[in-house]
Amino acid sequence: MSGLPDPRIPAGPIADAWQRQRERLPLISPLRKRQINILVVGSGLAGASAAATLAEQGYRVTVLTYHDSPRRAHSVAAQGGINAARAVAVDGDSVSRLFADTLKGGDFRAREAGCQRLAEISSGIIDQCVAQGVPFAREYGGSLATRSFGGALVSRTFYARGQTGQQLLYGAYQALMRQVELGTVRLLTRRDLVELITVDGVARGVVTRHGLSGALEVHTASAVLLCTGGYSNVYFLSTNALKSNASAIWRAHRKGALFANPCFTQIHPTCIPSGDAFQSKLTLMSESLRNDGRIWLPKQAGDQRPAADIPEQDRDYFLERMYPTYGNMTPRDVASRRARELCNAGHGVGPDGRSVYLDLTAAIERDGKAAIAARYGNLMEMYERISGDDPYRTPMRIYPAPHYTMGGLWVDYQLMSSIPGLFVLGEANYSEHGANRLGASALMQGLADGYFIAPSTVTAWLAGTPQVAIGADHPSCREALQCAQARITQLLATTGNTPVDAFHRELGGVMIDRCGISRDAEGLRDGMAAVAALEQQFHSDLRVPGAAEGPNPELDKALRVSDFFGLAQLMLRDALAREESCGAHFREEHQSVDGEARRDDTNFAHIAAWEFNPDGDPIRHSEPLQFTSLQPSTRRYT
Image (cartoon, rainbow, N blue to C red):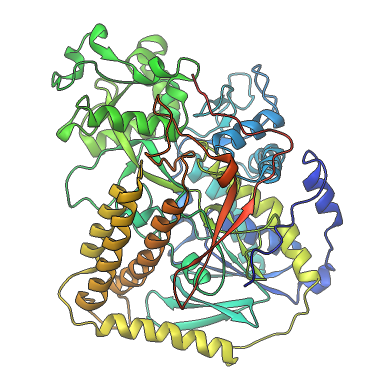
């Protein structure tokens, strides 16, 4: 590859750029679409919405998911809401305000044209979901209710209690299953992607492993859509589901897809803290709780009194003190850093002092317990089941944890990766979130990609590309199949004594220490050396019981963790190369006197896109970011 492909950003004003480009995109006859196969990998919001829409247009679509049902996709776990710029409140929201909040919230490290498009599409997403029957919360008069999320001064987040992701996924799921019933979608469950197939540099299919039989299967199509989510499980402990992984995008990266800004990983400020060293995942408490919950710590370091015994004058509502304009609704990266700093200074509460309080007492006294239960009831029940404490009576204890990944495969404005024919949707791509995603924007982006953008851009690519059918006996298919078989054979043949989870837990410990809430050059270099050494040990001392045939969850985990090693080293390398602080990427060498992130717009106002190099170190490319509508400025939330 010689440099970056053309990002295909429309020329001219961004306000109508998407409308202008969409009107110029070529179309395909409905009759011709019936002869074209498309592969969609992943069944979350991006995958289900894209598959349903493409099938509705007439394409023959195959959906591959490693779940036993698309309803188990991790999108179901999103809690707080979905952003949209709609004039349903009296706070003066608009498309331009959502655009500005998104670009600023990402610390000016995203394409402004993409942020503008996302803001424009946002209102249509709500209309689509309401038409599908998604039970958004409503006011007494019947209008849709909204609440606030971090990084915004308006109330633009639409929600369904604390189950917004679940309800949105069920809407996309029913649209998908309608197409399955009509015969336009073939749904294949329990298929785990282990290799991407390219023919003459064009994506034409995938190799999957069947979760029950263990059989390797070849699936081919005219275009491939990866909708496989993010990679926060590289940290082992994260808010992601246990099976969430990076193998699909990492296999595509090794085939030539550029990986953009891998070090941009978000630490969510409101997570239930880890209980012990053997915990396997963390549980998120929705950011929406910060609408009514006040975050505080004891003013006196080492104060071990129960929360109820600490009077108001001894409490530090630190976000309200530091950021009086935004208060508890400061963006996630800022809130997480401040919480960690105070806990490290000895003000933390709970075991090992690794928690802060999220206190709903004032809201319960003001609005009543029934009102709070109506807004957050399932979240309160979840917290009590996990912690044993009643959050209506005792403040929640929360602490930052790995959550969302803004980095991902590089895509152009039309969502195509650097591999022709390979489109990447949702969290799997590097998209509009820059260096820090605003709360409630993940669901918005996944559905915008699936319902509104990819159906137009995939069609445009197919219209200009000759379609030659290939079968499983094609040399490229056989080569990918052999590669997948060799990887599995090698993992099973390693005669070590250490289980996969032990390696994954140790890898996660290195990553959260060296490439977590804050980073520094020495720690990143040490992390690269530690991960490289651990990877060597993984390939010499791994023990994977069982065989390639039949169900083998340990083999599934081994395949995923082997990919995490490569990704972890790229994340560390990317964080080391970006000599600035921006959003969730906080380099301790680059901060202001008051501890805020200090960008370097002269040298780093670009997307870093890494090319896999089988013969040595990865190659770093950069896509300059142009700002015409909103000029970069210092993020201030005071």
